[in-house]
Length: 226
Image (cartoon, rainbow, N blue to C red; front, top):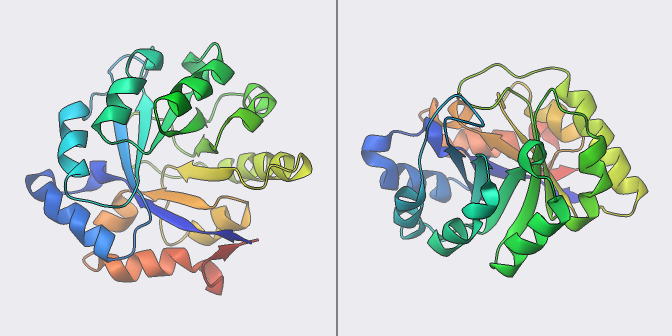
């Protein structure tokens, strides 16, 4: 049985009191902090970078899950790991040598994750899945928070988990990111995801502890994914 992990995405937090927001979700039971990096090229938006990561590293003890939605991620991996990333996700769409990228991230001291956009085939991801610690399936088009969940993502999650299990790679985490809320947490968990990224699905609520607890136990799963 896989432990279900909840990763609040801080892009939806109140940045005027970011440190307090991070402490609140940590105290509420979050397993990771999801940190989105956008460069305005790979995705049509800009977001946060190294100085913010360094700042939040000082206020939390839980792992920081850095999602690089950028071109040329190999240029920035070392800086983000040094600034506090425990796990780094890079996109298959901009990664010509994914096995080498996974090795680079690990040499720098973090776990390696490979992300895939909704319109991208799973074939190149599954081919190199054994080189990574986690696969990240995007369930929205990356670049902006608050988008609706793409229903076809369920089938994609099922396909990834089925292949990982077939190859004896059950220890690889399967993360889903985009539009994750209380009303679909059970479905993505049942499809095989065991790391749920949620931004507005958590930060739009007043009681972070309650919503994280409910996400962790979708459909009464008691915190496990089959």
